[in-house]
Image 1 (cartoon, rainbow, N blue to C red):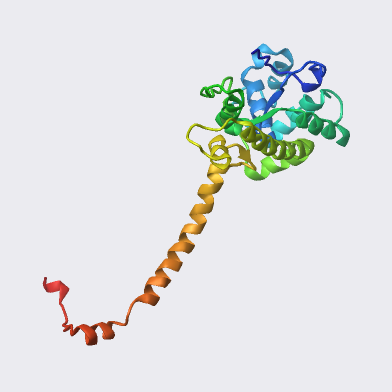
Image 2 (image 1 turned 135 degrees about the vertical axis):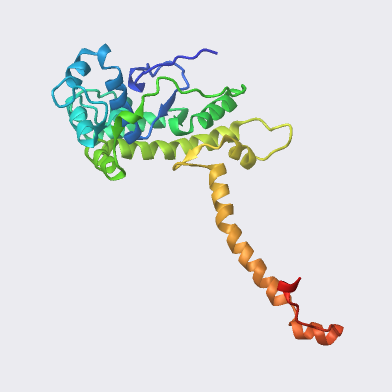
Length: 261
């Protein structure tokens, strides 16, 4: 078994070679902000990034805001990077056709993972390969403290620079969900006789930012109060009136002064 990995656009991989392709994607706005922070922190290793961050507006600064990210994204054409990567159109303006090509490439993937649930992806991949899942490790993480962006500013950046990426990312989540079900069905029967549904919950793949296990937990949390209220009503409805207890059992009642105890 051989693995080939790297920052390879799927369109650069020969289609005639029998490969099981896998890709790991990141939430578009998180990827954009992380890319900005990474370029700032490694600006001394890149002459173009160094020239940008040594401009009068940025030199000496250690904290940046949404407007700075916007200028940087326009300068380095960092818009819709997921779509660019998947479609192979690295330069020039993007159109809907490029997003369609990106989705087509995703449908050709055997495995689709997401960085916000990387361990789940590793478990899914290892399960399909019949090997023990290693622990997922994050490397080359950028320091996000250098950029301060509010939720509203993040949405504005996404609308301005990530319109196609957001569509492609949603498509990736839907395709990943169907892929995980296919992989679970293909798994050999477990020695414990666990059902496919139980094994699916172990895979815990991401479906719209929630794993199956998280979804079940959230559902149980919503149902629990309803069950508790119904149980309380049932108990109250089944309890006899106190006067009935006194009259049937001959129980004498008296006032008890708790303060004197």
